[in-house]
Image (cartoon, rainbow, N blue to C red; front, side, top):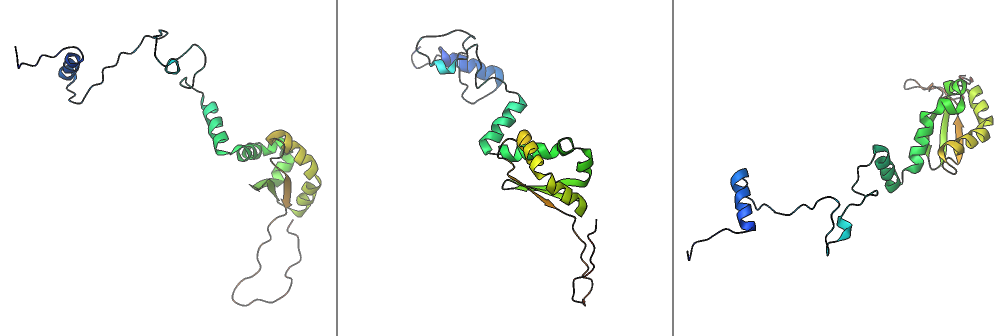
Length: 171
């Protein structure tokens, strides 16, 4: 028996797994402990307990909230939630004539379809800021800029007559 190799213990188990599965790579043989059992000398952080754990499944809402918090997107998400519910916040009549165009640096830009509605919205800005503070959180929207409709350009062709152009408010 001298000179002849004899597989014992873990080597025998690895050879058995290799023969059964056809995997030639090194197969790690680690004993998976039973759930709830505890051994002396092992790291307790590796064991799961009955309470919540970081390895437990998480809801999609919790994961999205964690990503938003980690990236610092809380203000943008709050403003987009407000713009998504714009008609509920300002009412259907106002939402029909005033839409949110952009949000940057705490300023919400609202575009109205006529100068009359732009004037009306400018008078409603303090109330709108209170509602936005309730909906999006305090300090997220610091100012509301109301713009009227965009006037069409009257510059056509290579020649142009200087002057003020037509005097209408387009609304």
